[in-house]
Image (cartoon, rainbow, N blue to C red; front, side):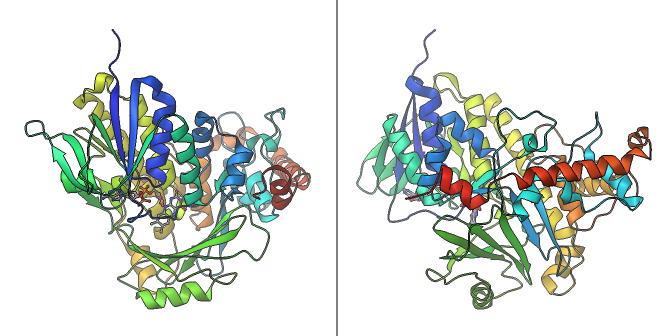
Amino acid sequence: MSQATTHIVVVGGGTAGWMAAAALSRVLGQRATVRLVESEDIGTVGVGEATVPHIKAFNQMLGLNEADFVARTQGTFKLGIQFRDWGKPGDSYMHGFGVIGHDVGMTPFHQYWLKGRMAGHAGDLLDYSVNTVAAVRGRFLPAPVDVPASNPLAGIGYAYHFDAALYARYLRAYSEARGVRRTEGKVRHVDLHPESGHVSAVVLESGERIYGDLFIDCSGFRGLLIEDALHTGYEDWTHWLPCDRALAVPCERVETPTPYTRSTARPAGWQWRIPLQHRTGNGYVYASQYLGDDEAAACLLANLDGTPLGDPRPLRFTTGMRTKSWNRNVVALGLASGFMEPLESTSIHMIQSGISRLLQLFPSNGVMDPVLQDRFNAQTRFECERIRDFLVLHYTATKRDDSPFWNHCRTMPIPESLQANIDLFRHSGRFFRHADEMFGSVSWVQVMIGQGIVPRGYDPLVDLMPDADLPRFLHGVREVVSKNVDLMPTHQQFIDRECRAD
Ligand code: FAD
């Protein structure tokens, strides 16, 4: 039986709207028409510059050329995130992407490191991570295609920093070339079908009515369709993640870009630093309950590397998730579906995974079946809750007692699921990734160790390696990592050679 064409209307032209339009037009081809409405008057959030490695798969699915994409978005490469002052003032650790050392059979490398550390012959865990060693030495190289799996270069993982507005512009050109029709205009009303309660059309200020079978709400925090029209509801997680405001300000670039994002803990939140080719993005994420806006601005401006390129831009948010991201014939993506602070750069990833879930559960002939919606919503909830736990870990695992904010974070009740992960890790350094949750063992281990959660024991399978071999094994891994990183070009050399913006 032939499929009817599904008419899709995307409301919003920020990162979420254009990512959705690009992917839907690419994958669905003739099965769908895609129309996107955006309002230049309202504009976009415009921040969102750091990503996680999964975005490479999204860009590859679209068929984008990496060098062209990086050059056109003023992008740089990201090997991980450096966390400063999180465990306690003066501390620093890296959450690097990619692998650490190499696992032996089923036993992860960090278990050997734990035993070695207890015996006094292991260095810092991150000395065994090619990502972290390269990041701190300012070097970058993607994994060469022909490198054997045993070489640490094979385990490099990376993402990008980019100018989000340029990325949206890039995807707009891509989408329009594939038939997406863009309409500039403000939605002033949403028509609901009197019986089903489904959205039948959005009505623009011009009076134009845009009809559709499926509506993608990418209208930002407000959730024009999912909330204003359908009153879906929102689950507030502020009691676990108390930051609710941010100030964002770019500054001029003063040094070669680091191949990592920096997150520095501050008295009532944390500050980000994201190096691009043409400027550096900065922002202070803070809890308004503990800090005034003027004090936050003063703290941010006092801690920039270069001259600010404008006044700090205020943003307000409520951390949490929409109770259903797919309600009736509306699927919310991006900020319309919920928000968690950009501590681990997860928002753009969640747009990507929402798009991929929608495509996997795409309704045939435009028929909205609750079976598809329930699965979509359950998967979305699972993803959000696991990411939430990972973010809360950064706040709860601290020894900081230098401000009311940190005293609250250190002592607040945490989700049971997170407590279970911490307890297991403390017991013997073990971690289990559930189903397809976003962050795996290597991420959790780095943050737990980095913030001072010390396991009491290690996996006994490690004892299968003779004690005399362990120091040699650890030393060998460290040497190989270090020597391979020395062969890499610097981050700036790589950009100049492969993807320099004009
Ligand atoms: P928006 O950018 O708000 O776009 C909304 C769109 O809807 C706009 O085009 C607007 O014009 C349109 N619209 C709204 N109302 C109407 C209307 N009535 N009629 C017509 N059009 C309308 N994510 C990361 O992955 N990494 C980061 O480092 C990161 N940092 C962040 C820092 C902060 C402080 C914040 C707040 C967010 C950050 N994010 C980050 C999240 C990221 O910015 C968003 O996920 C991303 O920009 C997607 O936004 P959006 O497209 O959902 O919404």
